[in-house]
Image (cartoon, rainbow, N blue to C red; front, side, top):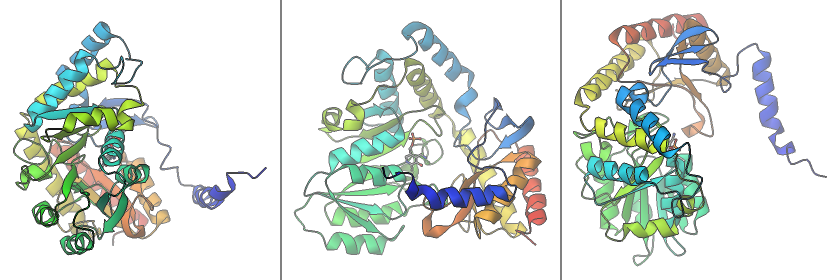
Length: 400
Ligand code: PMP
């Protein structure tokens, strides 16, 4: 027998060597109790959460919780079936209606996760003989959607309009083409130059799918995403999103005005061959989405928090993923895994949770501590966060 685990030995050894230095496992944290969108009990300590995607703080919204409880009582704990069989309840249709209202579009399809929405849309849309042209720093779900389908895959340099143009120019003019972009890139928190990219994609006759997982709720007058903020609504053919970030629950979706869009329900395998979301989840999602339509004040507060944290960390001497705050994700760049984990642990011991990220999830082999802010973080909490970064950064020698 060949032990199929042998190939993981380098990873197992690297991890054991790191843990042998006495640091905690950054991928083994347990939230024992969650107190609010911004605080949890971790190891018996009250901890500020700065590593969730709870951008709009909807997880404890009383209306959202009430809707979930009512649906649980009325429709039970789960659908036990696919969307195309017994798994479409009134709540799934209502959730799709909420998305159509939110995005001002004709069609919306709810998937069981955002990961599956990308798998289903990308593998379903681009078939044999077609081309998918994607940013090199695309999310894993976009890469996996490409791997699942039969189209040719072409990558362009991250956020490079010029490279996108060059690569599209080399493809056969008559071939079907899908350009896949993200509004916000989640590792460094930078945004895409969407108007320029849209122009180039249209010039070459490509359709465009934009993943707004990290843009929904926060960007644009209606919180639709970066594409709304940048005035690209007419040009993006498909917007993919998730309920696991600003919406505050779990699930994924795609919205579109394409007249034939509904056929995706019959061709997207990750829509067909999996169970649909529980009734309580779609009820919380629909309620949250409708509330996010009127969340201008929260958006403004989240921007204020993001700018203040970015400026504060920069002034302390931290190296960050972007020159200014471009989104609610602020990435602190570190030299290696040991430095990243020692700062991460220092912050955790002080009462702050942030995310660690390492290759292959990160671009260019970077080791990051990723901070993501919430509209519910108070001014006092942002002040506390900055204080903790200053003390832990000095203690670990990351900042002077
Ligand atoms: N797209 C992007 C850009 C993401 O960052 C994520 C999740 N981190 C997803 C899709 C998948 O979303 P979900 O959590 O709903 O599977």
